[in-house]
Structure formats: C-alpha cells, structure tokens
Image (cartoon, rainbow over all chains, first blue to last red; front, top):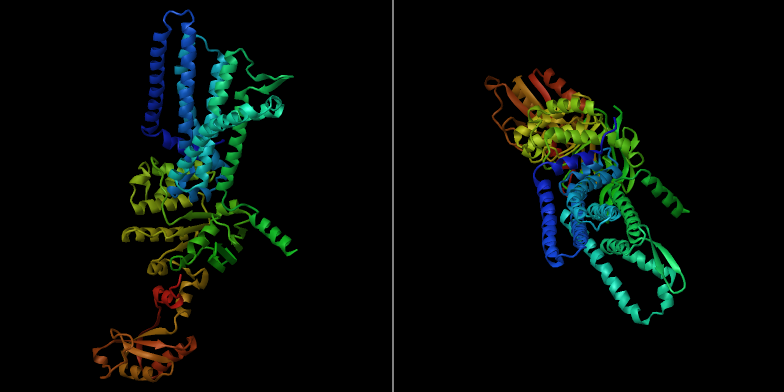
Length: 304
Length: 328
C-alpha cells in the first residue's frame, strides 16, 4: 500500500497536536471577521438608501476580505516554512533525516506540503466569510475563483521562499528573517520600482516606446510579480467588463493582446516556486551519487 | 573475518584544515570496533563519511564493499547511525519517533508496528511506548536512539560517543545492550572517551590523532604489542627467595617488584620467606614469547613452585597516552 510522505505525516501530527494551530486559526479568522464587521458598519452608514447599496457593500466586503487574507497569507506562509528545515538542523535531527532513505525531494516536498496544508486550511476557512459578499451581490464567481487561485499561488510561492532560506541557513531565526526580508523587498520594492520608472519615463520618453510591444510585455511582467498589483489590476479589468483571461492594450497603431495579470502572476509564481524548490532540494542533497565520478572526470580533463 | 568497513587513503579537508589524512582502516564483520582519539582527531569526520553525510575530499570508503560516494543509498540501508547528540521532536511519543524513522526507511506499516514493539522491548523501553520523547531521561533517550538506528536492521551500527553524559547505571545498561547487539551479529563502530569501558566491550580498536590512524587491530593484540615491555605476574607458593634471585639476574627482566610495592622500586632485603607466603612478584619483561616460556621452565627447573604465571595487560589508557602525542 502506498504510504504518505513520512515528513508530511510527522509535521502534520506535530503541527495539529496541541492548541497552537487552533489559536492561530482563531486569531486569523477573528481579524478577518473584525475587519469585515467594521467595514460593513462604515459602508452601510455612508451609502444610505442607494439602490445599488447592496452591490457596493458586497464588492467592498469581498475586496477587503481578499486583501486581508492575502496579507495574512503573505506573512504566515513563509514563517511556516522558514523554520522547517532549519528547525531540523537546530534540533539536530537533520543528519538523521539525510542519513535515512528519504530522498532530498521527499524531505523538501514533505516540508512544503505540510506547511501548505495548513495555509490551505487558513484559505479554506475564509471562504464562509468571503461568501458573505454573495448575500449583497456585486461579485461574480470568476472573481471569487481568481481570488482563491491568487491566494493559493501566493501561498505556494511565499512558502517556497521560506523553504529556500530554511534549506540554506542553519537557524530558524536567520531563515525567518531572510524570508520576511525577501517578501518585504518584493512587496515594497516592486511598487517603488514602478513609481520610480514612471517618474523617470513619464515626461521624457516618446510615445512610440511606451506603445511598443516589448515595453507593454515588460511592464506587465514586472507588475505581475506583485500579488496585490496583479490581482488588483485583474479586479479593475473585470469590473470594467474585460475578459477573464486576456487583456487588450490599445496603442496608437494597433491593439496588443496580453494575458490577464492574474494569469501572468500565476504562471510566473509557479515558475519561481519550481526554481526555489529545485534549489532547496539541491541544498539538502548530502553525498551525491556519482560525485566522485565528476571529480575523476575533472581530474582527467585537467591532466589532459 | 572479511572487513565490513574499508577505507583507502581517505582524506577530508575543511578549507586548509586537514581533518583526515590518508586514513586506511579495516573493520572486520561482527566486531565491536572502538574508535579512540582526542577531540578533533577525525573520528566524527570518518563516521560522517561512512554514513554518507559528508563526501571525502579524496580516497575511498566502502561499507560491505559498497562505495559511500557511488552508491550512498545502498550504504544507508547497511548503516545505522547514532550521532553524539539526541535530536528531539516536540510533541512526539516514543513509538511515533520510531514509526517516523521506520517510514523513512520504507518499512511496511504492518512490519513497522511489530518492529517498534520488538525494539522497545530490546532497549527496555516497552513501558515508555506512549510517553513523550521529551520526558525520557538521557539514558532512555540514548536507548531509544539506538532502537531508531536499528529500525531498518542495518549490518553496521555507527555510534558516536553514545555514552557521553550518561550516569554509571545508564552506561552499564548501554554496554550490555551493545553486547546483545553484537550477539545478534551486528558490527558496531563506537567512539568514546571512556577508554576503560571501550577496552571491556570492544574486540578491536583504532587510535586516531590529527587525522592519522596510529594503531588498529584486536584489543588484546594492541595491548600486547603497543606496550614497550610486558609485565609478568608470578605467584610463588614455595621457593620465593630463589625465584627472586633468578629473576633479578635474568637478562630479560628489567625490573622486579613485589606486589604492593611501587613501580620503580627494586626488591629489597630481607629475602622472602615461604612461611609468610604465597608471594606475588611482578617482573617487567623485555623478551618475546619464547623467552617467557624459557623463564617459566627455568623457575620450575630450579624447584620454584608456581600457582600463577601470567602476563598482565596494561589498560587502554596507558596505550593511548603512549601512542598519541596530545596534539590536535
């Protein structure tokens, strides 16, 4: 009978045993529910007896809940994984894992899936809160599904960032600091870069350059590295009646079709996640089969 | 006995520091091999290479004929490793700890459950099956760690300082357990600083210093060959005075003393009286086996009645201090 990954079983057993996981889930949902309640109170008072009040409340609730959930996923998932492999090193159990028949891939995959399982629990837990928006209307199924895909993809990417630092460094504290630092750099650095480039190019660059296909793709690519920008741009596009999967950029001479920001974000995130995962596996590898063969080949080449 | 561990010119560098210097080692199958050396001598490095945790810089290491660099996964099946520390997991019971490592070695669920019971019984922890690992004493944790290393039924057990930090009772229990494992046909490679204990339980030893193997072989052989001279203990029932006289004048006897007298003190007058005997004489003998046989024959021929004539083996600490220079 096929058995589950041992690391996954162990980590889930440890993580879900005791009150810690439930306390974290409760705090997460309390924050989300509190924000939702405050927002509802604020919007309903301002809107008054507008005919579209329900629709506007629904949209505001949905986008706020999605944003708060995204912030929480951005902060929680790297912390869940950054202590995983580094924690084994600190507990001095790392050698025992590496000396067993577990492959580096099994170790890394087990650590990632156990952290993601908990992140998915957090994401699943917000669905009932998010579905409150349906009571008021103004939100389509496509928007909800894109938000959930965005949350899942963000959880995977940020979990692999934490995992990479965890495989590289020997202390949980160091790995967590570097993981959070990387995420802050990404979340603040990309908007900062966009603002700076816009300021520089805004007045002096000819419109031919701004309308060129490569510039359009490059600007979309940079924007798609940021979950809030990518998902926010998708929401605006859908609110304006745009296509779910594609965006048509109108330039002076022609129309350029580019993938929707959330599609680009999903693809790029999965590519980066795969690369980070491969780097983590490489870092966990102890003695590599055939390593001495490579050494012998190198010596033979050097000897001519 | 065929060697289960073989290293040929095994070398490991950490930057400019030479941790292992062309180490050539052979451990016969079924032996308890004590690996002795000062801190930083290269014991742990050798063990980590043999457990595939560390690649050698050059040279080769084989376990049961399998190269640790070419087929590390095969070697991992053959080796059970117990490091010098006990890694703990929070919120894990003793059986779960063994179950996790059983899964890690791909042992099927049904066999695993049976094995956990057997191993906990073997290390005398069956009553602690559902106790959290964190709550076990250090000695119990070491025994549990040994059970973990045994989960996949390895042919070779590599134990790095297993007795460190244990109280005398836990040490004795561990020693008995190792003897039991040897009786089960396991080869055990063990490093320790407690030399007297190693001398008691090991069949073979290797002495390493600054990455170089200074001596290796059977314990008795090492104790015999590495000593500069041998001490012969002779218990004389009758003719003690004549025995003293013969021994004092024998060309191979460098020093003679009566039992109880300090080393370096020659036999003094008055001569021994058989009425107050029997007496025990200790002779520092420089001759070989044949010369020793001739000495015994001479004493008997001269009418000396002997109830005990045996070589006294020095302890491992003497040999260790004699062989090593104390440089790391």
